[in-house]
Image 1: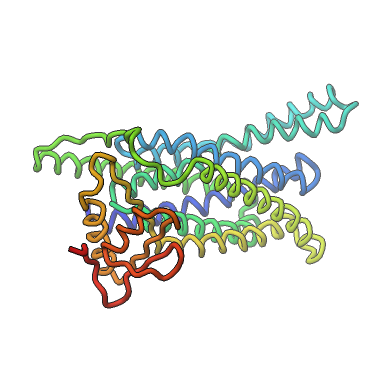
Image 2: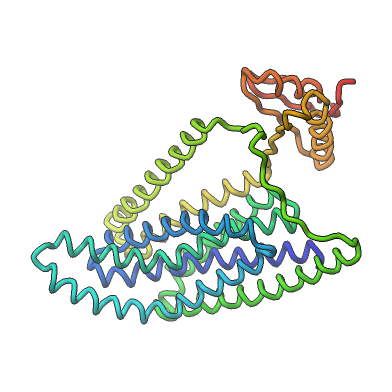
Length: 375
């Protein structure tokens, strides 16, 4: 199958998938306002469940995608699951109402315990579709890396388009769909779109399987799994530094979600907006910023160079780096080499390839210069 057609189709599907996600989020907030009786609890429950599900889905299905032969088919199953859950959600919520009534009878002497139980049940129910939604990006990213031969730019573009789709879905839901179709109609429409996405993805996966089979038959080769990294391979980032970065991301996410909840309430009071409109305004702003950042980041792809101990000091890393730099310059990009102050081996490779030092830990190949191996 033509790669350009396949790439365009996948990007369009992921844009629509992002739009559907925000349709659900906005519509389900309105549903849960009726459950909790206050917008703050409803917004907090839906946002926390969505964020937890996105993280859980990314962590779990990212590993599954590594073991799947065709990640595009797995993506189709995920979209189908999201659509079917959305269709069943009104029925699930009606059963929850009955359960809340029972819990109130048990815990009416403890409002805090009842609120906590109601939050936990709602959270667990929403965690299911949110986990499926969170799995779509790593799964489709895995396909982009394997099938389309792209890493930083491919993943960044997927993320940006998915987020732009979320912005579109958020705006349409708050200011058009809920007014014209109501909550039930809006979620049903989004569910049908998810199911249509799944159908197209299944078709594309079948075409990809057929193309790979033809290529193997023509080349007389068999597909092989990528070998697991050796324990002797050097680590690019010290474990302590990696943990610090992860915790920094976690704290950043904590702060961002706190801002969303607080600002949603503030906009509703100051501008006299409905809960859905104030939440949508905040989400559109956040998501648009994320999408723009993803689009900008898609232009930058980092590649790490690490040579096995037995193959060091043979010029292999420098030769491979020079080839990559030539490819980048052919695309009109400027190669940049970043390294640590004490990493003398990395600095030596940079100098050998032809990078010029422009900072304490940064080197570039200036315009008009070409990479050289230095011998």
